[in-house]
Amino acid sequence: MARQSALKNSTQKKRGALQEVKRSSAAEHPAPGLDRLIHERLRLGIVSALAANESLTFNDLKSLMNTTDGNLSVHARKLEDAGYIAVTKSFEDRLPKTEYKLTTAGQRALESYLSHMETIIQQMRNR
Image 1 (cartoon, rainbow, N blue to C red):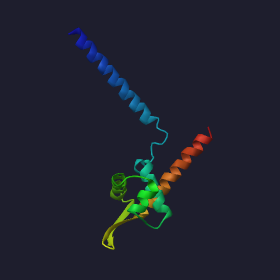
Image 2 (cartoon, rainbow, N blue to C red):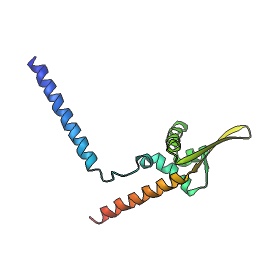
Image 3 (cartoon, rainbow, N blue to C red):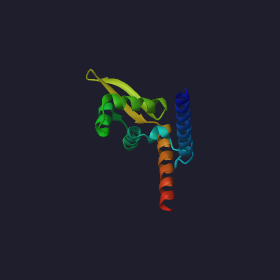
Image 4 (cartoon, rainbow, N blue to C red):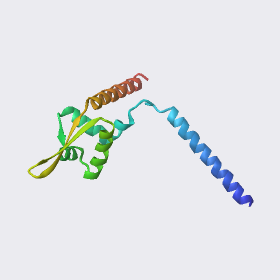
């Protein structure tokens, strides 16, 4: 019984310490206002590629990002759900064609993200 109580107390202390680390990490995060949706590597790549091109097909993006169909689909869907990209599906020579374009909201989000990153970089250089 004493051993169980000691284990329980030890576990509770570890959980409390872990939660404290999580709280302090969140409070000390160098970029608390960073758009987490765009910050993910593949989604940032998709948005950046679309900012540099009027539109890109699924296969173009897959090739540029060097990723799998499933991975690209999941990340593109998140960007579409956020309104950052627009998706058009059609057929070309009886083959499905999915085309992506950056929306105005996506362009603004990317510009805001880049501005935020520039501010962070400048702060780090001024230390």
